[in-house]
Length: 446
Image 1 (cartoon, rainbow, N blue to C red):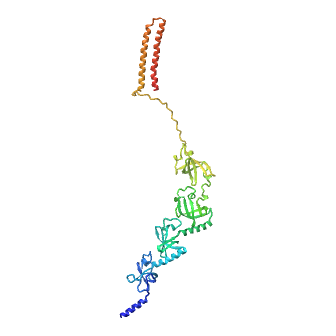
Image 2 (image 1 turned 90 degrees about the vertical axis):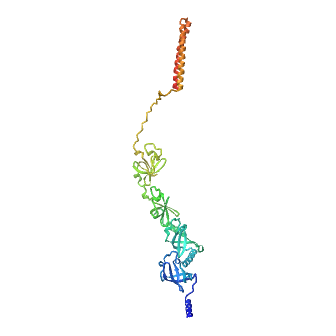
Image 3 (image 1 turned 180 degrees about the horizontal axis):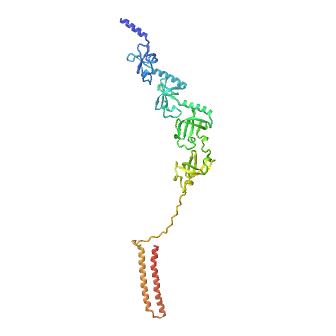
């Protein structure tokens, strides 16, 4: 009986094919669980396909495969330790994908695959189970800081490096984008000309203007061409995605300049009627200079308010009276349509300022010293000296008079001497008077 059993097992074993590690088999799904699937591979043991060997992204096999599906799988182990065959689907797919990538690299073929992951330095795309890395610098012809918009999208690219041993498979989308734009630019330049009106979408906004996509070609809408009026910051007027209708102002090679300053909206149309001399206008101070300020009286029309016409009184600097943003009312005093110049006056609308009467000059009266103030010591000494001198002269005069009395009865010659003696005191008294007056004069000089 045992011999019959052994023969039966031998015949049974011979009825099943022999398999080896690494061999590729065709299997049929006979059961599926979220974490694994069981396949009939025509061997004495069933094959087990774990979810992580199906793909790198699958989490639940029941959503990926069904009972009855036929799959090509690769044998990892003939006996996984439990008498079952370990299988892999993704490794076989990766090998097929690597072969596909090798052929595409050699032929410089354009591939198309979905972006499956956004990495710090670029994008990861899946080509039939194999991963290709596209660096951020090769994603587009312009640097894009935020790559999240590409997640889940199918993009086209070519391979610039293929080295499976080092696991370096590099893709390049930039050259395709550049080539596409060149072709679009050439086609567009053939059918457009200066003056044509076109509609485009704002692609980016910078300090000096905005770039507008006009059908695969970027046209520059410079800040000076955004409006007849003054534009300070383009970002306050345009944002990415805005639709813009402009006209082509200039074509220089492959560069296109756009403008929104359509001639029918030119503020200088009928300016001679709107801004006739004598008209009263209201405007906003737009910019300041040393000689005056420019007032925007209509978007795109500035008038000069000279420093001499700012106020009735003298103004040294315009900034002493006005500042940018001030609203002023003025009168147009000059209009030159040919040169597009307008002069205005604010002064003529202001009331006359009252004249200030000059103050009468008052005669300055020197202050006399008060009684409490002590006189200058030098002045007091001079008075005392003069008084002493006067006293000496008086005493001398008295002596001369006495001598003259004694000689009254003398002869004539003597009488003449006496007369001289009499006259002498008088002269001395005059000198004494001068001595008295002198200190007073000295005091005035002091």
